[in-house]
Length: 272
Image (tube, rainbow, N blue to C red; front, side):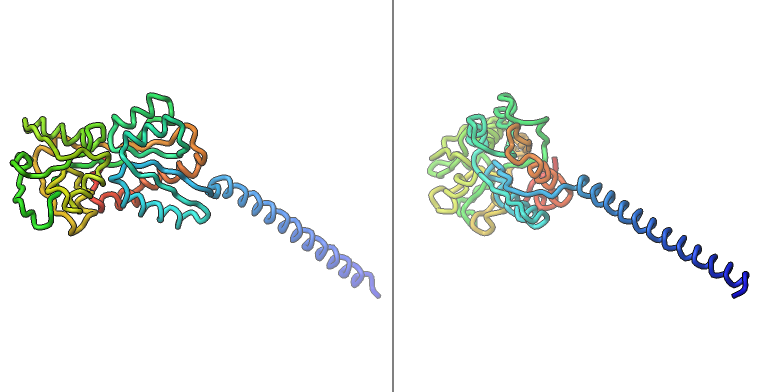
């Protein structure tokens, strides 16, 4: 074998060894980058899990139930559990130690019950507003056309209790119209007031526009100008001792997102 042939073979072996080493180094580098990238992605968006307990005003029942299902769909492994009721009752439960992650109130006043006790984390954020409307029986047989008409003799009218946001707003509207009204009953939340009309136990009730809309054909809504003087802001807050804080933050983010606002707007809520 000639010297030139041996030299050529040696050079080919060295070139092959170098290429193999380069490929191995490249593979290690790619694997390392992939691991770094994977860990970075994981830390950037941790997987949410567990149950989020939301205490929310009764008027939010339909829209929040929809958002809860959307949240569970977006985050498999999570569950949203709701406790709907009068905001004052919910606030009292929270300050009394009831375990919850999120509080969505129908007025700043009821949210203040919680914040004054130091039971919320950060400043509450207003996410929607709501306006009053008169709910009558279908077809409005008593021909209620104004807030003043609710003072007609013999008309059975129901209001929310004055301690509840819808009741406080109704009283504010009555004061603006300089009217006095004695209802047949005061109810502990807006759904209970509306239910009295649906069951024909009352002729009319002062509730929120969103509740009239949610009831569909079961009641008829009557707008009145004084309602503009009694629009309620709805604040939402993460609670201090939230058992599932990270997932709760994500639910609040959904409520305040464009998607959440669309659901609330379609339910009849006003933008914050």
